Structures are given as structure tokens and as C-alpha cells.
Image (cartoon, rainbow, N blue to C red; front, side, top):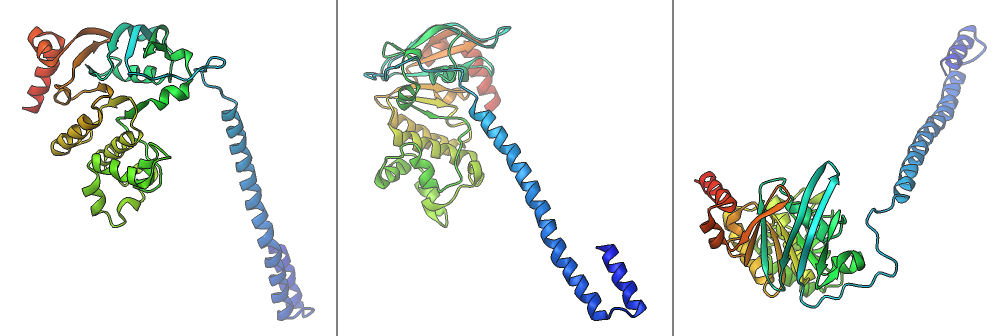
Length: 322
């Protein structure tokens, strides 16, 4: 383009071309190079998209390490009893996470799992959902080995309130409906009421239609956990799992949420993972884990009377709060 402009300027100075010819050549060159520049942009976009497509197909070719057996039957839930039988698990053979662990959660019972960080509490939840299979032992739900039933039917009967709630960039109302996509609007509103979300939603300019942002970035940790609780209420599963369900709440909100959880867990089998021991003093049984093994279990008062590992955790938390 520089050469063309230089030649045109030379012709003008020689008198063989006019200024109008110079402007005309400049306009022609602009019309020629702008589309060519756009073609370069299109080529770059195509190459980038091709790389993404290759990554997508590579991802689609991956298969899950946990697979259903052929013609796996659906889990038939009757009472919701859970049994861990000599379960061991490791991500790496040289670092066991759970070691020969056995305990039962009877139908309708609330059992809390406590222990220091890294004791293997959250791993039990992953094993129950069958995100991983145990290295040894078995997990039974109403006497049925979860490795012998379909994963979909297993996860249909379990509801979880996770520590880190994943929300979609949709309205609060639709994020709650995710717990049961077939639920009616009235059922979603009832779940909002039971999760004590009404006052929070009433303060929002768009109410329940407020979009929460990617992964719920417009909500606080406590508000996201309330949405997770509302989802679980809407699903109404026979087995409930609470993984640090009140970790992001202040004391006042925690009390209201705990009362809500107590309401929805009536008649349901509940497994509670807790760091804050004050939230599980009403549990039917408390299982204390340490380095992947159960070191003691019993009621809150019985464990305090033993003055062993649970007593140490309890007094340490009281000292921190003081």
C-alpha cells in the first residue's frame, strides 16, 4: 500500500496524474485491504475454534473410572439405612485416606462425622455418592451394595447441602428449581420459605428473578448455602447429607438454618459432616475420625464423659470461641 501511494504521488508531481486520481487510488486501496485484514481475523478465529474442537473431542473420549455393571438394577429404597463395611480407600497406594472403616446409620437416624482436617470425612461423602469405588469393603443402602445398582438411582435418593455450592448464572428461582426440575412454582416457593430465604429475596430489586451471576458471585457464602438447602428441601430425598452446611453463616443465621434442617430431616436418614461441633450436639450418634479411622463413637454427652479425642476437639473449640 505504501508503494502504491508513493507511485501515485510521483505521478502527481510529474503532472501525469491529478490529485483526484491520487484520492481515487487511495480509496481503492482502502477498499481492498480492509476485507483482506478481516480475512486474517477470520482465519485466526477458525484456527482457535479448531483447537477448542480438538480439546472437546478429547474430553468426550474420556470415560468415567466408575461404571455401572451391565443391566444394573435401580436402587430400591425402603428405609434409607446406610452401612459402611470394612471400607478402605486411597487416591494413591502410598497414602491411604480411609482405613478399614465400619459403621452404620440406621433408618431415620442423624449421625455426625467429626474429626480434624484430613481425617477423611468428606471422602466418605464421595464414596457414598459413588464418585469413587472403595479400594476394599462395601457400602450398602438398605442392604443393597451401591456398586451393584445404577448410579442415577443412587444419586436420586440422596440430597446434599455442600460446603461450596455451585450456582448457575440464572435467577435464584431457577437455581432452586434445579433440585427438582419437575417441581411446580408453588413447591419452589415453599422450599424458599422453609430455607428462610424469604426476607433476603424480598430485599432484592427483582426478587426471586434476580440473576445470581456466574457460580453465584453476586451472593454471599451464607446466601449460597441457603439456596443449596432450598434445593435439598425441594428434592425431598430419603437420605440427607450435610457437608459443613452452615460453615459460611453467622450465629443468628446458623440458628435459623439449623432449625430448618431439623425440620426437613425429620424421618430422614441424615449424615452430617461438621467442623463446628456446636451444630451437631443433638445428633443421635457422633462418629469421631482420625487419620482415616474411627477412634470413638457415641452421643455428645457420652463422648464428653470419656474425655478422649472428642473431648479434646470440644474443649479446643470452646477455648477458640472464648
